[in-house]
Image (cartoon, rainbow, N blue to C red; front, side):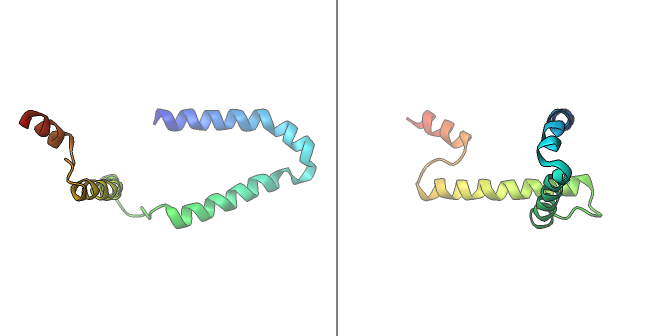
Length: 98
């Protein structure tokens, strides 16, 4: 939560400090920059952010955990294909066997 607040305040500060010079440079078209960013983030959100309507926080967290564990499983499968230990505990077990 603190990172989100810090990011919000930092973005507001940067926009507040830069807006007058950008407005002077672009004139009445200054808000086209913000409109373009809005359209970009609308498309980004529509295609890349999963639907969370009607889900509890725990369901959303489990969804993100499942997505990240899928990446972890791919890495573990690669380690198994290479006949390497796949977890830290396996590495520790390898050291004690020698």
